[in-house]
Image 1: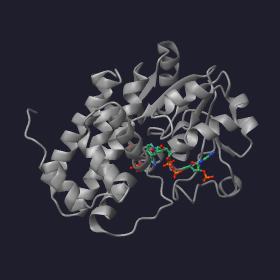
Image 2 (image 1 turned 90 degrees about the horizontal axis):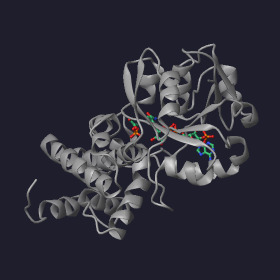
Image 3 (image 1 turned 180 degrees about the vertical axis):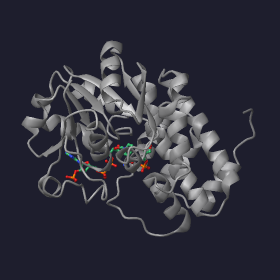
Length: 317
Ligand SMILES: NC(=O)C1=CN([C@@H]2O[C@H](COP(=O)(O)OP(=O)(O)OC[C@H]3O[C@@H](n4cnc5c(N)ncnc54)[C@H](OP(=O)(O)O)[C@@H]3O)[C@@H](O)[C@H]2O)C=CC1
Ligand SMILES: O=C(CO)COP(=O)(O)O
């Protein structure tokens, strides 16, 4: 099974570095010039040199000769990328390596792939992992979800390494929901911490945020067990507690009232909007998501958002 990673941001680069410890891997970037010369992605993942088995290219036709393609572009860019390269991607195993819900359709990366490239076998690789940890070869466990269990088994074998351990599921819906929604809750947690509301408030937001994740997953018929696994609870834990997370950091900035670099990839911002819309369309009660969407759209300030959450009617857990 030959492997290429399409998209050389922090995560795509880290995966390519990690997988090239198993054998040759191609990393495709829109502009590969500097990376090919320096053997390092100084812009997105500085300090992580490329192993010899990693080949960088900006020739998509060459990269897509591999039979398994990992796609690591941000969720809101995925459809455009697939449409632009549909012929080259037809019939391949396409593993989404992004976390989010598309604003225009309210669906996740696996559904977007199935929609644009119906001949492909879509899968998703998701779970608790920072790009830098993967690139450094630190121990990491992720979820590989593919509705075709046989292909899922092949992908699990090929994409696991000595330090990157993949667990398999056929529940693509649960896996993509967990990875998308935890980012929204991480923004909420970062906001609370930035505003000085304390670690008890963060624990409450994580737990009630997880209840929102389960509620939406149940509505969309995802398996609750998937939400309790690496791609849901696992990634929620990591992202809501680490300043390495960009979603958490955006929240911290909002809580502190300090500026945040708008060019940073923060998947939870668009996803909060998409999920808030889904909740309204389906009469689902997702108050933390609604508060995050309100903060991001400047309809709410932190104090009002917190007051709103605390003033909700008392209920059973
Ligand atoms: N960073 C991390 O620790 C982790 C990230 N992820 C997920 O990985 C996904 C990507 O994030 P990450 O790598 O960190 O983001 P980065 O901001 O580091 O990089 C985004 C990359 O996407 C590329 N890109 C954007 N639009 C297109 C397009 N239309 N066609 C081709 N390439 C495009 C950019 O290319 P260019 O450089 O040319 O602009 C850039 O290389 C996100 O969904 C994120 O949630 C998951 C786990 C960990
Ligand atoms: O998904 C991640 C960790 O699993 C990375 O989180 P951020 O996108 O918030 O940096």
